[in-house]
Figure 1 (cartoon, rainbow, N blue to C red):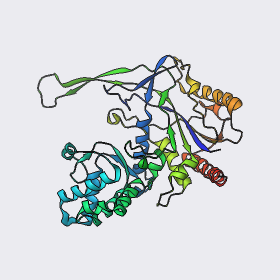
Figure 2 (figure 1 turned 60 degrees about the horizontal axis):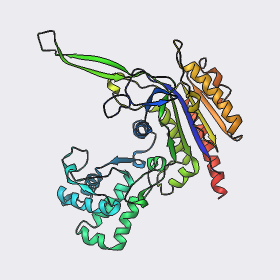
Figure 3 (figure 1 turned 60 degrees about the vertical axis):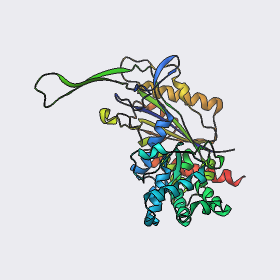
Figure 4 (figure 1 turned 45 degrees about the horizontal axis):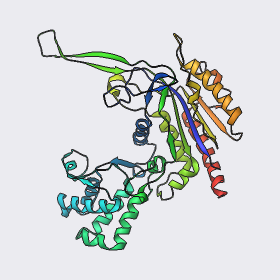
Length: 388
């Protein structure tokens, strides 16, 4: 038996292109036989990770960076400890340490890329590295900087380097996991599942023709013309956080956040983050009109409520979407439901979402919802782990 926190949201975006494909078009998917707007789970997970920092939800030292610039990052930390090394020597030492730690291959062309860390080769793989991990690797690099090759030939030193890299001492790694193809010791299964956000209705992709005026030109011609695609969806969003998996992934965590606090931060990031594609052109930051949090042993994706697309010529998609979701919750609860489940509902449009009011306990704020569901998840997680 296990316990999960399932999140469901209905969220409307204005004209936007928050997540585009390789051709610059908004991402879509065919569902229920019709094209829908889609925002990938990867795009929203990155938005959540960056929101941890921008909203101050998680202390900076408890977070990670997904990067190919790990060598330069270690080199920058190493130079703070041993400035006499110089940049090239620090980069060479850092490269030896990171290759030993992860088995990553290097790409010297990456040294030409402008970064916020010391100039150094990039790794061919994009690594998910915690800030405490980097600090520990830099300390080990400093210990062996005089002759890093001899230092790493000693089994205890190489083991310490690999142990530092394999540490799970970061909140976002504990939540979202880490996959390193060439080193299973670094791989960590995520405690979180995030679905692709999908429009509840058929979503036509529209085209915006734009021009920019040359302010210093005397003729009437445009300085530049172009086209950009956009769409305006009402999205169903879903994510799941598994309590015992999160607790296990936090085994190495040396920070001060409790499991309840991590879960509450995740709920807030889910609700408050928005992928930033073309955001300066569309200012598409919105919040979910409906947010449901359920602590349950059986987390269910409720997107089936919208397999038949909502068709409306007026009045918006939200009232019908709320009615559909309420009916789907009742049907799935009757057929497959968990009698121990507890749910909370936050809505910014009570009139339009009235059918949902009987499906969960109403709360007035995101803070209240996040606190209550996180506390319940932690309590039941402790009970589950105590049975093992």
